[in-house]
Image (tube, rainbow, N blue to C red; front, side):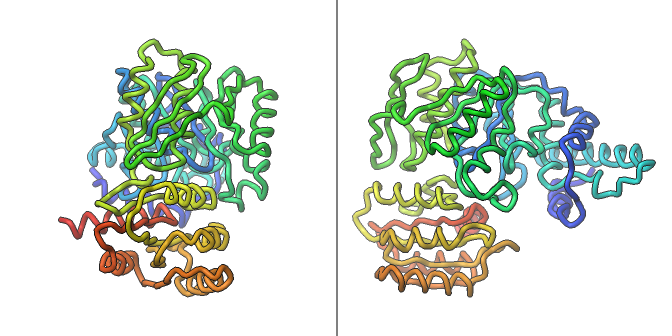
Length: 445
């Protein structure tokens, strides 16, 4: 049998020869692997920021309520197996290898079936994301969880996860500027792509945060006859960010006012938790109660989202403008009796100039250690040097700048400067977060 490592290496090679596929292409392969036989209720989540956090809160509440839960998320931080979980446990290495072989066999069968029409291998072989989605659905068809939470990879309308004919609930998180080369140049255009996950008679939950995206989502829900449950600005009340937690009140249609506590200091999480709670209401599952919601939210963990990985050292997957805005809001609200430092690295296909400008103008950090990420889409260090230097001069900010060939060197540089009351934040890309988690695990071993 193929090993998990061999399977991961093969999947990483897929972008070299996989082409673009239609949802019908994915649907046929899904049937071949038996992934269309999942009987549990399906919750489909799209959006720009917060998808993973909403998945984590939903999973935790459903588990606390005594339900079995399958979860498919992306991206992963350290291993592909993180993307496919049953409860809080990721798929085992042995199962990953076995399911990989099952999908490979289906791909070969589909290729033989379609050889007469000469489609070319690029129309048969799944893309990187499609392959992992097929593996997840094949595995969940074996496990048959009560609930299956599916996170879109990008967009929604044409996302592989949207090939499913049946779903029971849709959730759309905050809409922001991301993947604009594929999804559109305005919030309205991007929201239109995300809205593509909606289905007739299937409830959709989203937050009224920006009028431009809210209008598009509401109009599309009306057009496809999807009942829309909109969380208004006045539904989330009395938000208090404490030293290690956040408490707030949520006004809902079912529980009225409910007081909730999150074990995080991330300023963006009350919105994500509110989406999860409102989604749970729509499930109308008698096993879910106000108590299981409270306990589930408090127990929820999502790596790399304002995660205190060591005392005074935080990882946050802020990888676009909205993410940076919320990171800075969290930093401003967080108690710090010493100095603040930032380790930053970004991908070239992000709006990095805007992100760097936001950080430079905030004047929150004593020093910013800039690094190149070990990823082919990383922004080159020389370009980072030029952009950071320009914004430092334009804003007149007094922060220090240092540049490092890799994240490990940047981390050691800041660690040498950090005193006991200082705080180090690491942000800019989820790839950076994953690399730092692996690096810290190695040096602590």
